[in-house]
Amino acid sequence: MEQLVYISTAHPDVQDRDIAEIVGVARYRNRAEGVSGLMMYNGRNFMQVLEGPPAALDAIFGSILADHRHFGIVVLSRDPLDARHFSDWSMGYGREDQIAGVSEEGDFRLDAETLETALPMGLEAELRGRLLRFPRLADDTPRAAGPSPDEPGLSAR
Ligand SMILES: Cc1cc2nc3c(=O)[nH]c(=O)nc-3n(C[C@H](O)[C@H](O)[C@H](O)COP(=O)(O)O)c2cc1C
Image 1 (cartoon, rainbow, N blue to C red):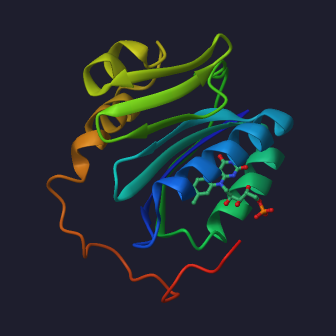
Image 2: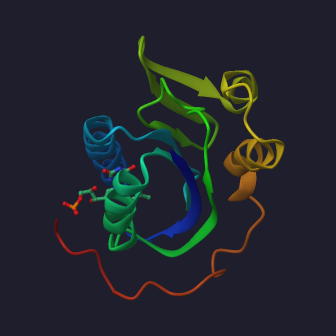
Image 3: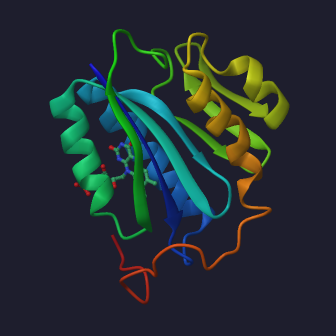
């Protein structure tokens, strides 16, 4: 079992419907491949935690790296994991102050304050801090930070 955490910048043309599509595919494929985690989107950047068997992470992250809906992908960590933290989250999704997740009991929505109590116990302090700061990150970072998208427009997928 391994855990991979990355951040990236959304392609400027990305719309809410693209996010909905990503989350829909992610929930389905991650569940099928035994990968759990959390994805957050703050209107500008993505941050995602993926945990699962190394081969499944390689396959899914390979697709993510090749996805033109984002760029400037930076892996923050990839570490062995004794046990899943997000075992009942097939893929959460957060936008600005609304965090939506999927748990075994069904979908749920949270605001930035309740994210603190909703995050799994036992999460490493540094990762917990990064996740809690993420919803507000877009407010105080300049748009131009990071490399440029390598394509002028989004191709239909
Ligand atoms: C920010 C971001 C996060 C994504 N997260 C996942 C994910 O967790 N699981 C997944 O299967 N696809 C995810 N995707 C979609 C994949 O890039 C890819 O479109 C999808 O897995 C289908 O794979 P394929 O294009 O190789 O057929 C993500 C895409 C983006 C832009």
